[in-house]
Image 1 (cartoon, helix red, strand yellow):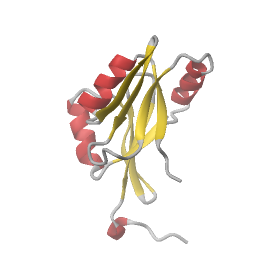
Image 2 (tube, helix red, strand yellow):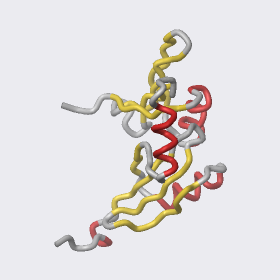
Image 3 (cartoon, helix red, strand yellow):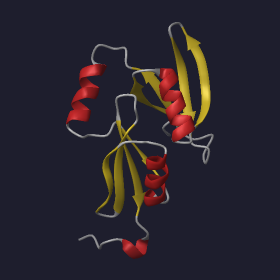
Image 4 (cartoon, one colour):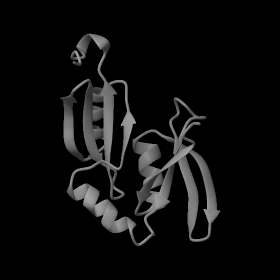
Length: 137
């Protein structure tokens, strides 16, 4: 069993597609009209046949309070892995991305959290090289 698709709820699919492709660097995979909205997915250019991220409209009545609670508590909606978090942080900052948390070491990972402009906090994480990891009991 593998994860095929996962969702992130977005306030505006067109705005989300622009941010997730132009700013974050994902590639549009599917764009299927479904009435007022679309089945709109993006993938990593590094793994184009990998897990798809569905940019899902925040239309269900439960979604707005759910998203607001996550943001208020500082909880990311999802997490993306990068090879060099400091370089990615600098690149995204230069594009105007707002960070809720700058890169910080947390155990055996380095992480940061940014605002996706579509109502979500998104975590970036980098697994530390083996030489920088702390021993686990």
